[in-house]
Image 1 (cartoon, rainbow, N blue to C red):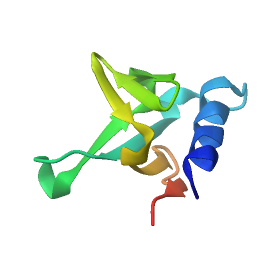
Image 2: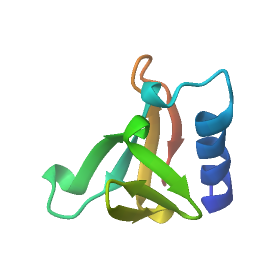
Image 3: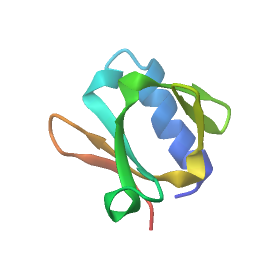
Image 4: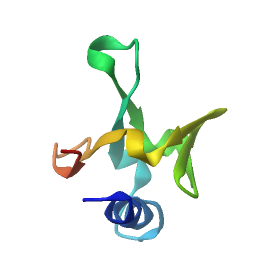
Length: 80
């Protein structure tokens, strides 16, 4: 799955009426964090171009390792 598929999944979560952003989180590559990973609720970010904006930090989409549903544990995207 490339950036196109990743953006398609994120757009669906952000804009489709059947999905709620607060139900999902992304796991990103975050050097220095435990296991170099950090989970962020999609309720706390904006999607702008090829970036997630988390407060004042721009996170490139290629740093997303996983997108998962917090309630069900379902993984919608996992980087190889």
